[in-house]
Every structure is written in structure tokens, then in C-alpha cells.
Length: 223
Ligand code: V4E
Image (cartoon, rainbow, N blue to C red; front, side, top):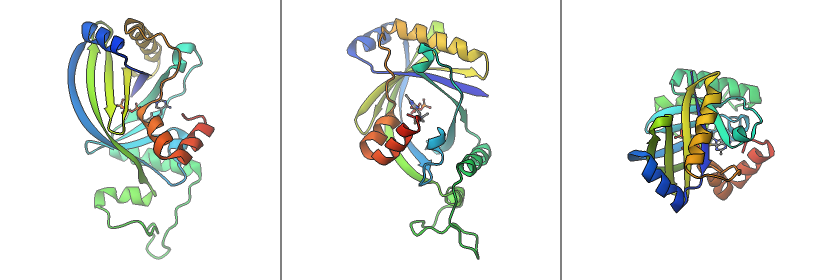
């Protein structure tokens, strides 16, 4: 299974110049993300991120991380894209969180006054009490640093936040260390000297629009 190792950065004019000189731009595309969780944040409080992007479901699952300085600037998540596997995993995570779902005792349907008719494809969301809590559109410009096998994305979210990310996909296990080294090398090439962890799009979205969710995640040291 593959693990995505990433480091976020703020792309200054200087960084952009270096990127345009040393990397190959492999295109630009736009996508809309919808993120889902229960009302008690059963997924995100355990650092699981369920989203729908371009009609496909994705679940980012946490992978334990080390304590080194390089690692502190990076995130790593295992990504599941098979819907049956996602549903299984999400069910387990919600159960571990001890979420209880109100149900109609006769029909065993989830009781929720806000729930309207849902397509069959999405009855599982209703069944697990999952609701969309955040959605936004991103325009992404992607680059590859060819000698490193590293991808660099420059994201512009429609709520007014721009962020860059250096990303390496590896198979789980020993490759993670080499991914961290590649990311560190790429960061040096791009002239990124700061040691501060840069917030991702979701951090900023939650902080601006959903402060109670943001505070719960900060308190649990998820963000
Ligand atoms: C893992 C995570 C979230 C899910 C989306 O993560 P992110 O990589 O920021 O989004 P995006 O659009 O770049 O996804 P990609 O196209 O690379 O698959 S939302 C919040 N988190 C946790 C998290 C964290 N703990 N710290 C930082 C800096 N970012 C995200």
C-alpha cells in the first residue's frame, strides 16, 4: 500500500522563479473537494480524512511519524481509494470513537430530521451519520523535479488561500525515510529555509469557517 509524504510551503515569487527554472510543469487542473465527518468529529479527531473528489471517494489514514526536525515539517498518510475498503475502515473508526447513531427502532433507519432522500450510492453516509462539513474548489498547478521523482503542487483554493506542497508517494515501510530525504533535498533546491510547519487548506478553512471543529482538532493535537 502506498503512503503519501508531503511538506507544505508558502510559494513566494522567489520560489516560483526557481520552480519554473528547475522543474517541468506537468499541467493545471481544477477539482472540487467535499469532506465528511460525524457531528462529533469521529473521523477527523482520529486524523482520518474522508473526501469525495471528482466523483471518487478517498480516505486518508494516519501513519505514525517520527520526531526528527525533517519529519516535523512533513505529514504522511496512507490513502485508500477502494469504496468497500473505505466503508469498512470508516465503520471501524467511528465505532472506536464510541459514536452512537440514533436509529428508528422499527425500520433501523438513521433518524435525522435534516436527512432528505439520498441516492442509493450515498445511503452509507446516512447510515454512518456522515455529513459534508467542508467543501471548496482548488486550482492546482503541478511540477515534477525529474531527478528526484518529486512532485510539487501549487494550490489556489477558492476561499482565498494559496499553498504549495512537495509530495512523494512511496510504498509503506523503509521507503518513507528516503521520501523524507527527497523532500528535504527538494525544499533546499527551492530555497525553503523556514522550519515552521505551514498550514494546509483544511487548517485554514476550519480556522476561518468552523472554529469549534478547528479548536477540537487543535486540542487533540491533530492540526
Ligand atoms: C490529511 C489532512 C487532510 C486531507 C487533505 O490533505 P491535504 O494533503 O492538505 O489536501 P490536498 O488537497 O493537498 O490533497 P492531495 O491532493 O495532496 O491528496 S485535511 C487535514 N489533514 C491533516 C493535515 C495536517 N495534520 N497537517 C497539515 C500541514 N496538513 C494536513
